[in-house]
Image (cartoon, rainbow, N blue to C red; front, top):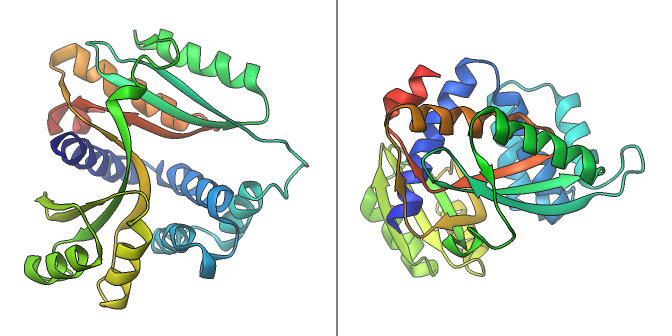
Length: 247
């Protein structure tokens, strides 16, 4: 699962930069909205939503923002009909991009996404052009200071995890989509705090980007993530940490 490990590391570094630059609320709101849409608005019965709310509290997000995000996710705001769409394409240099979009206006979303790709020299592709590179997997991330590697490995493997790696001070646990909740519950029952737990799309391989291609790719991903209708951006891009810090 090297593709996932690499992208997870890049994403975590991006999140730290985003937090430093005040963009973290946008990301957290999307996480809460997406979790509520997929699993309902009750955090007691929706572990992913519970983790998203905990992350929002840790970032000192106002409670009103959390409540609005949940209501948007379960469709209680503005009587909107939400349509879920997948967009696929490429960064400069040819790394894959897969976007999960939830929108009440398909035309608006398409125009904004096309503009973002055009602005940073990416290219939209046809349906299925990169989806085959990604497969759904459960991914649980744990700070390595929270418990020993042996303790975490014993808990997650006994609960049905497929693999565990350690990168940049984080245990990354990979499961099948079906086993994700069982593993998450086992980690929680063991009293080990988690950074995140979700079913996501994992790239099977990575695409190394250098120089201007890497810089443009990260700028494109940042812009896409800032769009209101884009809930998740998945990529197999592999870039140096210095590129992210340059943003």
